[in-house]
Amino acid sequence: MLKSLSLSALVTMALAGAAIAADPAATAPMAKGGMFVDAKGMTLYTFDKDTPGKSACNGPCAKNWPPLAVADGAKASGDWTIVMREDGLKQWAYKGKPVYTWVKDTKPGDTTGDGFLNGAWHIARP
Image: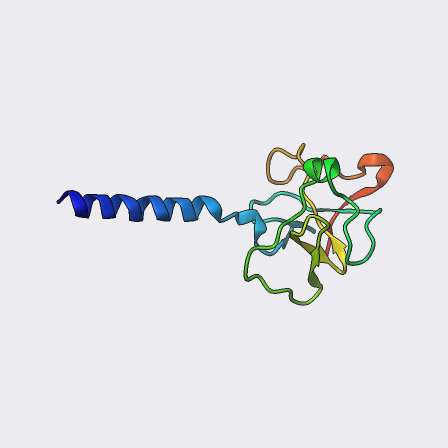
């Protein structure tokens, strides 16, 4: 009985860990209301200082503007591509422009990052 209880507890913990490890924001972006959002509905942005296929937002910048990570096994399609970041992580890009969320957007639909840094940040739009 104790052995089956322990096995059951281990399976439950493993499944819970897998659910925690899966980041829903790492799934492919989607269009909603004329802009792109992540799986949580948070607004996505592009950065004027990025070059096609390369992010210029690293270090402290990436803490304020978290790159939209690519989930393991995700495949690029259409105008969506995957870029490799300096930190070795994969990031979604739309028409070559990497996309990010903004830490000061607190709920789905917030767009407080639009125009930030003298207009260098923009809502990502289809």
